[in-house]
Amino acid sequence: MRRRISPDCRVFFDVFAGTGVVGKHFKQQGFRVVANDIQYYAYCLNRAYLGLNTEPRFSEIPIKRQGRDSRLEAVLAYLNGLPGIEGFVFESYCPDGAQGRMYFTNVNGLRCDAIRTQIENWWESGLLTESEYYYLLAILIDGMDRVANTASVYAAYLKQFKATARKPLHLNPIPLIWSQYKHKAFNENGTDLIGRVHCDVLYMDPPYNQRQYCTNYHVLETIAKYDRPKVYGITGLRPHADQKSDFCRKHHALPTLDAMVRDTLARYVFLSYNSEGLMAKKDILDALSQYGHVEVVSHDHTRFRADQDRANRVYKADRVEEFLFCLEKD
Image (cartoon, rainbow, N blue to C red; front, side, top):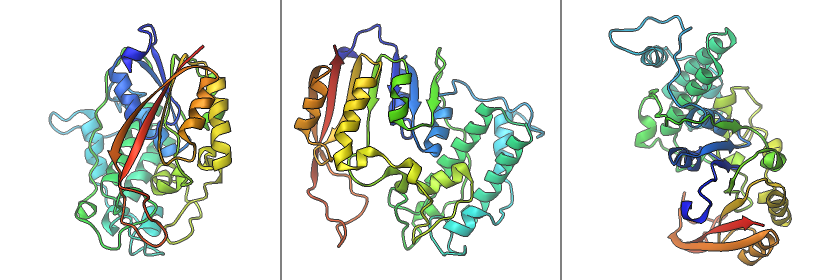
């Protein structure tokens, strides 16, 4: 991508950042990164991975270091050693909870509740800075995702615990990327934010189909917020009306794309999409061409399958074409 943009471009805006994979890459490449995602769990990850250049100090936590342990190692050792408690994660997402769901083993659900409660207590007591708070939340989210009993996303859980889900939850430091710049994370609707972020490059990776992302990661959202929502259904969905994307609605996706490209302050716009999305390739090209010169790079890929074909889901094919639309605005 560097060969396609002017070398004086320094600010990269990932408006649908998710877990921040793209933003981390461009942080390593020397850009100042702005990341946004409407889901709070993703915001927590981006606040840590992108917002921090060095590990927090945790100077106010009243914990004694052991030997040569750093303050961070001492904090994580303390959290890893907490006895489990029955809280919202255990009650809502574990087999011995009220609904018998199997997202996590009982032990990991109990430990998650203990750790999440302690983090919140430290925060409410003024013992954590914002950076320290989000760093610990990111570590917990990452740790719980590693022991989740799912095929890939949280739209469903497996009926038997897989090997990785049976492993005990363990908090580990997350690697941070040093940078000379300060980076920014937002937790807003991207369509509302787009015109307020001064950037050189806008990267867009919106939802492709009618499946709302918020239903795919609702469990991580609840762990991050720990707001004890009224969950419902077999999978324990949380209310998510305020997180729905217009890109998941066929007649709204293209007008939303057009408005965002029109309103962005970026000189370059890159859109990641695929051949089975709600928007047709030709329609995207027509929309983007209104604003400047457009090129398309495409690659044929083996389809990612979270599960097998079944009555209510049949994959169209085993191959899918991925597109990267590259716009230089006039």
